[in-house]
Image (cartoon, rainbow, N blue to C red):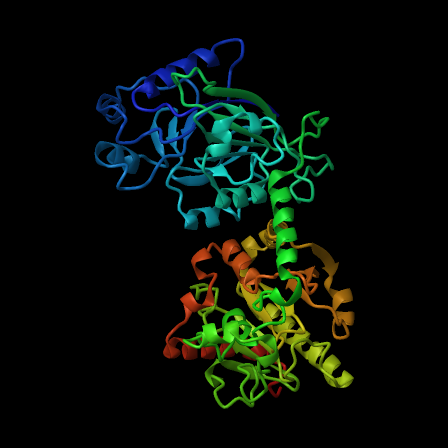
Length: 544
């Protein structure tokens, strides 16, 4: 189905009435009719004339003759008085007949099936993180420009205002994930960037065609500089592949990501390699990257440890490793099951939350080998190595079976590096309703960070992983597939990558750092006991 969409630049102040009248005129012209009108910018604010607000409140305003939508500032310090009352009293954002406020962010699907996402003037970081779990976005509206959008653009170099406008990397992340067909922003000038490819990304047409993005800055309605303040276009849903425009460029965000990866590679070479990502401090990895039962903060000695030359850094032995049962400081109240070659603990600072659907505990657990080894492959005894792998897989599948009874999938991830301390797998419950987003979110996040991620069959991977001597990051997708990132020595890998992506999927971006989620010991004990009780029917280590 092909639909016509109309977009207007910001109708500031008393221009709202004029803008809607102009839209009605265009809608009735040979160019129309249009399915919807979208207004960019802070449409309703304290600068909106009081008589317009009064007419909207009293029902005397002349309604637009086509459905009209806008994202608006929700900052209570900026939007006050009658404007705040008007917005707050609207039902489902409907300010007036055919006039809908979509809040500071959100996603809608209009009658033709076109899916629109937006982030308004005061969209918070938390709201942006919630938006990222959405898929299939056709049109994106943001109040801020994405960083790097002018990269690779010949036309951008000719417009001073485009080069100077402030740009936001968070909007770049959003655009990378959505790969919209159209992306609109407010600007002091009109600028239609050359279309760019979404090569290397997953949101391409099911029929195999490339789906480019068109980025457009629309000037304010009725601006004095006579800059173009509207944009009208046709859009077909579902997307139908067409011949790519002659002026199409590569993806500027992906190009910037490649440049960043190259710079990181250069920075990593030689003795100056950053210790946190390479062969450096094990202590920081252990204390900040693993969510384990013996976790504690880095403390006041962190700086001197960071500055210590690599040759002086002391290895972590089992008596001081927070994942080894021989460590007298091990927090034993996290342990929920002990097998022949591995054991299971609940997580310190769990990502997930307790629910009221029968799980009644976060359900975030770690599966840890008894052998003190940075990777499975480095366990010296081959029989122990294979038995450990088999038992850890059995534990993970048993946890998955238990979680499935409560409407959750078991999504696991692991980091295997020879420069690590003690290998382990983290398993986090993801509601069945969100499982479909896991693969795409990890793939998008990997691309955004310059990582190469591949999909593999879990069964084939398990057979060889115990002997796999390479460093890697893996995600178990809660199905029979896994995603894998090969971690060559020069790759600067974010140790919190898995947790951050799952935090986005779960709508819990504020819990992406375990340190902000640490509980009282009383609650830790309660959650561990609850998990142990739920897991009991599935715990193969217990007598029949």
